[in-house]
Length: 336
Image (tube, rainbow, N blue to C red):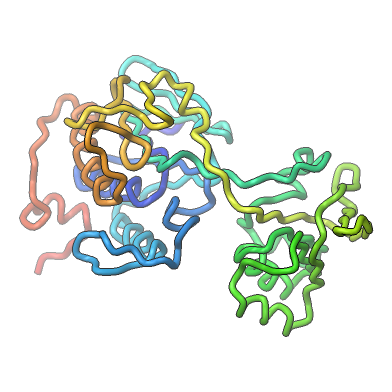
């Protein structure tokens, strides 16, 4: 069991800034996210699109914002638990017991839900036996590219993820890229580079028809628009059909909901459950604005109540980062 001051559900910008606000108060956080990296919507939906409404930053991309937030919380050495989803929570006196999809168990007096519009989940293959091979031979993200070295890889999709991984993995593996349309949605220069290398077998106007194998996948059959089937020897399938957003198990936690968002008070952004807070796009209250800067404010106020619950015998003292030697020490600021 992992004991911590706060469990944060969601590693988007609002969740990352909550880590900072908790960290400067001396609180330890554990962050759980269903995606394979930090950034949430900013990274998944608009990593390269400019954001114009972050205070003090005239313009930045989602990727740049995420990078800066991660740099800001580096002194706190926060543990991230990616590719995991919170499945269950239960009350244990003053603490909450949190269980993830990978059977990790956390104990904490506080849970901050910073899940954006819900958890992002990959659109999964619908053919028979795809689920059977999931996390063995069928993957929806890449966490270790060395796994595919020297293997036969079939990649499905027409966006940037499919093109980028086809190009990268073709350096060490035999790659077939399969897309249901003639045109690709990914960056044209990546597609040009793919074609230029000549290492990737590109099949357009094809879809996955079936998977063959026993304990492991041996081959797949793909079907063209005109009904023609082609067999391809395959060790691994990588599918990049985009993401869908789901509220997931959060809807079963007994929280007061309003149209897939969580009702909170505006004093500390606590829900109807003591010790469970909601910040960012997933929370709602009169006058709520779905802005990143609003989420930063919500996280700052929630962190104060988290301190009171995690340190019931200590008095909370508000301090400015500009003058507090204690906060600066936690941030690793050297005396000038």
